[in-house]
Length: 250
Image (tube, rainbow, N blue to C red; front, side, top):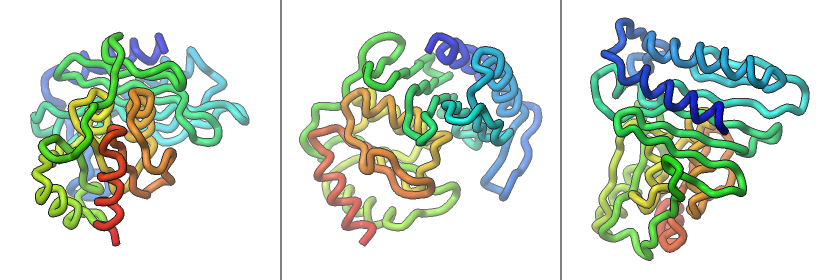
């Protein structure tokens, strides 16, 4: 955890530098990369390779480097929320996780560079924000509280419109902020009662998933398959949120 946490603080400092000099399109107009994404991931990969040469690495910008058979692998999203970052919006994150060979999370770190916060968790040892223990919200209803969600890239996902309508009827405030890792971390911190992701990707979702569940949140399912939905919720609202999401998706 020490190496991962040090990388999170380093990445936060780099991300807070003046805006990137180079922004390029990847697979479409809403899918971009900056020179800062690449700088952060390159350095993180170098440090992790030196410290843990037997582990594999899966990164958002530079793909997969295999480790030795049956070794854990790192998951790196250097800037989750690149579009926000490239446009000067202060809501993005650095996400780093360690996964077992079966894909289950072992360690998670999510950094919010603009607020100077670092969320951490090791499986079975609880979740922390800058060293202080985290606990999911004590709420027993979604009404009057915050629900986080995200687009599936630039698209609606199946059931999103119906879910938003159902939450509005319950006077539950919805936020679509533009960083999956940071949105999920808000459930861990008790700032949001729940979060729904239409298409789960381990690179930006698994570290925060571990942090939230170690803080006491409920994950449905416990370990989503790639590109499938994820619901994270405080225990007291998990059934209500799950029923709404199930109905919305038909």
